[in-house]
Length: 172
Length: 172
Image 1 (tube, each protein chain N blue to C red):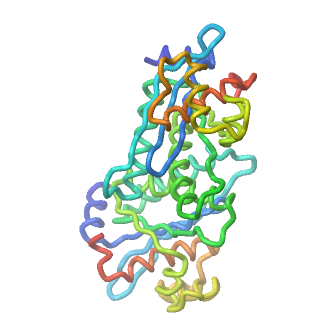
Image 2 (cartoon, each protein chain N blue to C red):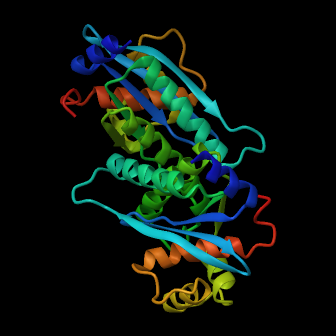
Image 3 (tube, each protein chain N blue to C red):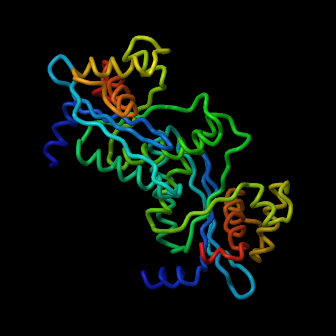
């Protein structure tokens, strides 16, 4: 539906947030609705048993492409999760982030990133907020009956919400 | 030329080696020829001024895809360059490696990796060999008149040569 895509882009309405991970990569999609923000969807893709690195990166790349094709966001926002990790985790997450950013770029989307601290500060008001506090605020801000599960989807929605709070997010 | 590709794959002859880098990413392609190995080509892609991360990853992805389409290798080999780097370098190289491995995977190629130490040991005989020693051995092994330049191409050729020295490389 190219028309829908064009509309979303002009309105700058729909944001896809991604929480990258070697084991689980989550996504969450939000859209402005009146004075608030609503959730359009969320989900995860998980590592498969015995999967090669190349297989993992292909799986995540195709998964993110599918979500972009389905939700037609105006931009892609990915968490910058590099600190306090060991070299092996840094390697795995760096590679995963590479294919996520590429999926956004190949779809012509602007790509933004925020640190976990920026996301927590934006959504909860405190950069050192707990995972549970983030989940509760995501539930509250999106008017959900229960906190999004698994937690990777709440993190991804928080990343998208963080970007929606930027006054100029429609421009970038 | 699908025929050429099929031939190369069956023979397991042609290997593309990649030296990933945030600033410069080099490639080198080698093929068995009689009792030796010959160079088919090499080159680099460089960062552009003011390039975004998404732009960089797209550029490298398309560059590697072009080389795969042109040389039709039977496998892709990439250097594992993660140790002794700071967090920012790890992040940049991890992302670059992600899109390189993805380019190989999307083309249906097996992807292999070797550490810099394994590459040096395989090509020069010593894991602590200098960059100049690697360049000289690459020149000698491939029967070149001059050492490949820039050095990123020599590194990429060394990675491909390292894999060609494995007795079972045609299987993987």
